Image (tube, rainbow, N blue to C red):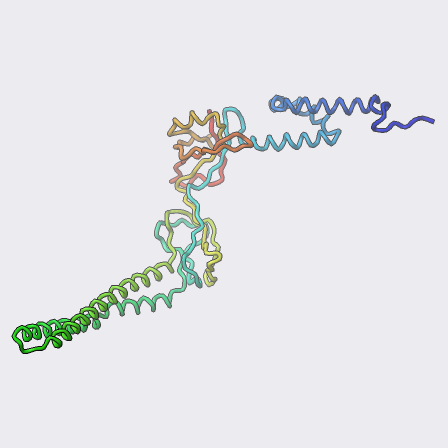
Amino acid sequence: MSRLSTPGSAHHRSSPRFFLRKTENLFVASYVLRWPHFIFHSSAIVTTLDNTFRNPLGIIVVLVVLATLMGLARVSSADEIQGFMEPIRSIELASAETGIIKSVNVSEGQKVKKDQVLARLDDEIQKIQLDLAKHLANSKSAAEAARKALDKREMITERIRKLRNSGNASESELIRSEMELAIAKAKYMAAIEELKSREIEKRRAEITLRRRTIRAPFNGVVAKLHYHQGEFLSPIKPELLQLVQVDELLAVFPVPVSLAPTLKNKKHISVYLSDGTKLHGSIHSLGVTADASSNTLSLKVKINNASGKLHSGEECYLRF
């Protein structure tokens, strides 16, 4: 009766099958240590994969290598780097006020100018509050009455003072008159302060009403609308729309850290589109923190797009 070989037996370890598996593992490990060499030798990659996929360890190794390569995939070659276009500015335009949206004056994809009205919130109450504030600010009767009362008290006090000096008025009469004069001065000052408070209240009402109208903070394009007429703009989600500025674009590239000293001394740089079109740009920024997986920095190049022919998300390239 033949003896069955177990994974731990000497017969199993010396069998051709065990030797072949051990040889394959060593083969895979040797190629993993030298995987950068095979990036440039496709035939070696095919051979390696053919042997590797025969055991689970090989599959794991391949997955690790592919994940590493994906971190470097955006750097297409030593002298060409792939990037993409993005808007120079993109914001979620929000409102400081809440309420029912009275009107939306733009649509998705529409170009807008700075300070153009994009939407309005219901503002009937705010208009009434402004009218009331204006009325109170313009009402100066209380201040005028206090001013006249003060003038009268000053005149009376001056007469009593003269009578006191001539001996025709008592000291208590002069003291009482001076006290009433002080009260009249305080009432006049209070009336003046009230006028100032009403003026401030009027300005606040004007600002509150003005904030019910949402305007474009810069020239741009409406990328997406989040609300429509009749909906309630809530404080939980106050973003009305997404506005992007595309008259200038940023070409974003992951550049090797080794190129940073060269790029820091440059102001202008050329960018190429997929069809070979050459664009002239200026360096907008160079990242200061490197990506650990790819050892690259983020380079942003400003591109003029006044013609509107370029699009956000479009592929572009740097050549060295």
